[in-house]
Image 1 (spheres, rainbow, N blue to C red):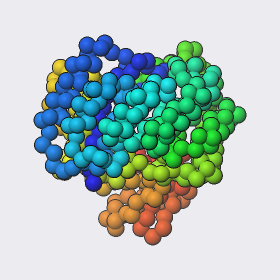
Image 2: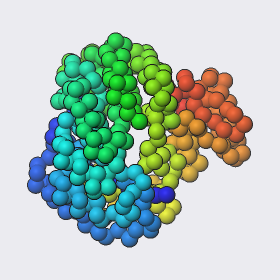
Image 3: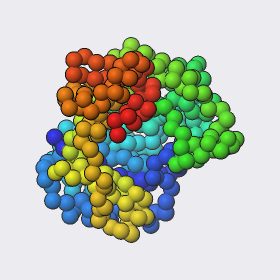
Length: 356
C-alpha cells in the first residue's frame, strides 16, 4: 500500500552535522511555504488511498496545531496504519502531543543523536537525557507509544565509554524502534566541511576515527539485539516502520514540499530542493532521471537484513561483483537470496555502489 511524505524544512536551529536542505528561515517564508504546500495537496488527484504518512524535515513538530490539522485533513485515509512525526526532544508540550494523536499521528521519531551532555553541546543540540526520558513518558501517556530514538555514531568527543551511556539510556527507555547512523562527512554540513578542511570548529578534530565508529556501530547492533531490537535495515532496529519499508521495497509514495521525491504509476519526480525555490516555483515538479529498476532494487533492497531474491538475469548481469563480494565475505548467499554480511554492512555504501 502507498504512503505520503510531507517535507517541512524549518528548524529553530541548524545542527552542525546536518546535511539536509533545512535551516532557520524567516517566519514569512514559513507562512508562504505552508500556503504552497496546502495548494499542492489540494491539487493532487489521489490515485490511491495512502496507508502511511510521514512528516519529516526539518522539525515538523514545530508546526502550529491549526496548521497541522489543515495539512493532515487534506490527506485521505485517516486513520492511517502509521503516521509519523519527527520531533526535536524538549520541543513539544502535552497539549501538542494530544493534538497530534487526535489529528492521526500515532508514531513519533525523536532526533536524540546522543544522551551525553558534552556531545550534545558540540553539535548544537539543546536537550538533555532527562528531557528525552520525559518526552517518551509524555508520549506514552498521551496514547503514542510508538517512539523511535535516533543515535549518531562518530560525534565529536564520542568514545566507546560515552557510547555505552547512550545505549544504556536506550535500554532504560525501551522504545519499540531505534535508528543508528554513522556520521556522514560531506560539504553539505558545517561539521563535515570543517572536517574536510581540517579545521578546528565544531569539535571537528575530536571526531573518532573510522575504526572506532565501526566498533560503536557493531556494539550498538549487539546491544540492541539483546534489548529485543534486531536490525532489519542497515540503520534501523526493532519494529519496522511501515512507511520507511516502502522506500526499500520500492513501493509507491507521494512526496509534498521542498526536496520531496515521489514514485507512482511507474514515474518518478522531485520537487525543488530548497524552501525558497519551492515557494517561488510553486508545486510544479521537475522530472527525475529514470532509474534502472534492477539496479535500484539491488541498491535499496540489500540495505534490508532480509536482502533480496535475485533473478537469474540479475545474477548473470552482476556475476563478477557478486562473486567478488561473496569471496571477500561482504555478501552472503542462500540460493537466490543475497544479503549483506555483518562486515558488508560496515562498508555498505562501497558494496551497493557496484550495482548502480
